Length: 538
Image 1 (tube, rainbow, N blue to C red):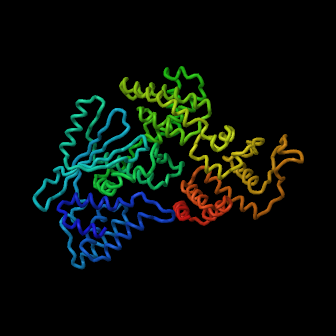
Image 2: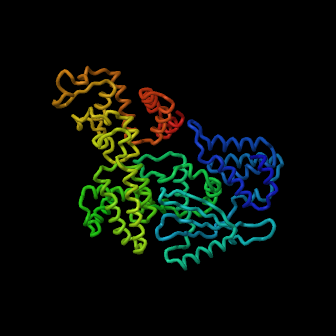
């Protein structure tokens, strides 16, 4: 990087240097190594190396990191390094003093009535030009950031152009000649709110550090992987995008900092009730299956599509049917059969209420029926490869959260078997007593029924479990630890708990040792942030 920086000393314009250094810093964005903070290791390592170099190239690198660094710590350390090198008499070109020194001019949002993506155009000027005067509000370049709402509201692409007027004219002409296109100004504070939220979600998705479900909606990359974000132009422009968004004016104090409306359970339930009572839903024959399917449609719109359950489009229904449902939700057979019909009714109902033109509603309905065969093919009995019956699925996934299946089977393997069907209420993982009974039976083969049960598992000489042998304090303490761990695994809190367990399992560590290690970490952690840090280090 220092060798490349030496070549950049001859650059005349700060934007050229910003783009080049953004590509350098973005080279390790999204890279992850278990037990290692790559961003900190490489970012702070580069700063230390540039400071120790004692060269103008090193000072140029520090100036770039001070302006474009992706963390406050990096930018602060780079500024300290710049002070140290300048005290030694080193000088840098004029462009190094102008890195990040831009003035927001205007912002716009471009898209279409389907709303699958939004192109946010931010126009910036530069305060002065060493080679001649420049109006501080004169547009110099535009940064275009593409938000993909079908993939969880993350940034999908980014690019920069200096042909600002030509870009804006093309967008205006398209909006004037195409009734389906839209292009409108955006307040600079609104642009910052929207883009800050999108940047945060993108970084969260790339880092694979999902928030606890109890804390609210999580980032769900639908139909794509984190590598799809880090392998293209987004990574190249990500440090520059971060810096430009920080240059936008902050919203007034007290104004909401999230562009996504909150959808509590009661509000979702009211929306579902209104749909199910509508004329569009009148022909749905199985009311229970229709209700369950409606809940999933609304959950997808609220949690994935930026809090917009009423938005419908061909791309959205394809993403919902072919990617989100198969990877996220387990449907019973009757729900699988009902889902396309419920979704079609929802498209007609929601499309009319959101003002979508009839031709667009028709195109969305076509996408539903064209995706139906593929939906049934890829979704048919998703638990079959695991050898699970529907009864086991009901026990493990009472909330239909397919993404939690593996970790719940790991936490309570007996729930995937037919060994506890004779006392389902006494093996409920949602209760402390049920978790205790499951773990005691799993670890020690002991069970104490509160009521007598008939059948081979509870009476007779061929029962496979032992009666409770007594109260062993050491054994009870071990069960206490395992119960705390199993409860966290069941609910996925924190998300990197199961990630750490999978890493150990992939290395060949057996289940008892994995449980013991996780239990020790859980006991030794002093806070939730400390727990996440210790788990990442496993």
